[in-house]
Image (cartoon, rainbow, N blue to C red; front, top):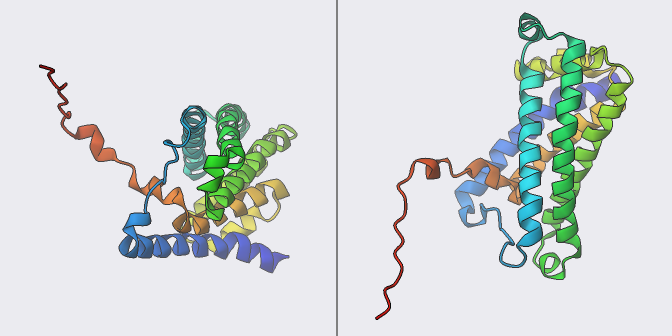
Length: 229
């Protein structure tokens, strides 16, 4: 079990990140015309607009919360007067709110993708697989809130923080040791999250890496109405 734990939570994260980087690089270099979100807005707009907005608001806030919560050293939290118990309550509250917003949006998008005949006909197997993976990951995350509610001392949260920070500082042995004793739902959540990095280069998720930030600073486009004589 320790060997499997070391592989899954000590080595697998680096394998997933390496594959994500290399495969994304190759795809961008060789198949740039496939590097897109492949929007189906022309086929159906109403559900897409509502579902996409809720999903993106929720997922962005959830990811930001994970990034800050897991990678900020515990000493900084203590300096701010936030101890493990309080941090866990904050994480459960904010994660629950934005996770539920994301859940509603993703449910709309998944229902639209599976049961709208026009959308389903233009969907690839990867499109559906990615939505199902994201849905499973989201359900695990929401489910972990109920597990966390059973012990609000923040002990397991500190172990997960230690895992993430040891992965970031290239200490896989310490990372695997830190996560060894945590609840299985957290482990499955971490494993599936790492697996999404492997799926990333082969799906429409690549559009995340091409956020059109330059649009914020571009000049306004002048549009004039045609004058009728």
